[in-house]
Image (cartoon, helix red, strand yellow):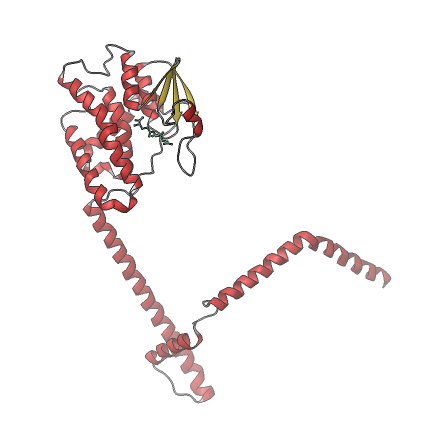
Length: 328
Ligand SMILES: N[C@@H](CCC(=O)N[C@@H](CS)C(=O)NCC(=O)O)C(=O)O
């Protein structure tokens, strides 16, 4: 029986899906990625020296590299509708997509993940590929032609990954429809069942390639935030100035015989107070922060003392009180 060495959230979903489509029985050995590095565990190297997924074992034979695995599995099912007939136009397209998925598209997506700094170089390249895929699906539902084939399975992971990088819905309706079609296949769902491949959660495409419209929108959002911040600062300045003016004029002319002040004089007093004391209120200076920390420290110390000795000290105090009351 075929054994699939399956890594979570990885290309090996495609192999499980293909096996489900073929109706071929299989066993799964599960491997979990390191939560921090996202690398496969060392155990996978015992199966194949590169320690990558997918990798399958058929008795003593080990097959790695997803395209090779697809071919290997299809060869066990001569006449399967998942591979177009040799010599047809569809067969040529089938071979193309089988290689394109890992040869062109996945390397680009992986660069998008790794080269965060080079957003501007990756985004147009990504758009080029997505436009190409979109146009390929304009007249056919499937990559090799009218019929679903293993080429669609091979393409699925890259398209799923691309969908996490860019919202397909508006700009790429054909690709979005492709995703809906593959997800609707019962074998695809079976491959992702909890006890089989588990759900795919591909959210690691960073940075998302942004369209010009998206960039435009995010600039607008920043401008809105800056404007809102300025308005709030102004509102606070007006409010504080007014409060200082009211307080001054209500108390100081009568008590200290000082002249009444205008609103702008009150603002100037506030600014002067800020410059001379280094703060408007308590706690905004380094000193204030230090005192808060010291206070926190003493609260923490008190809590620790209560945990360790407080109960015993209280019992001793209560006993003393009872003793004194008894003597009285
Ligand atoms: N081109 C190979 C790529 C294999 C590959 O890089 N697999 C990833 C999972 S999607 C992997 O094993 N990553 C874990 C690691 O490199 O430690 C294939 O199609 O099988």
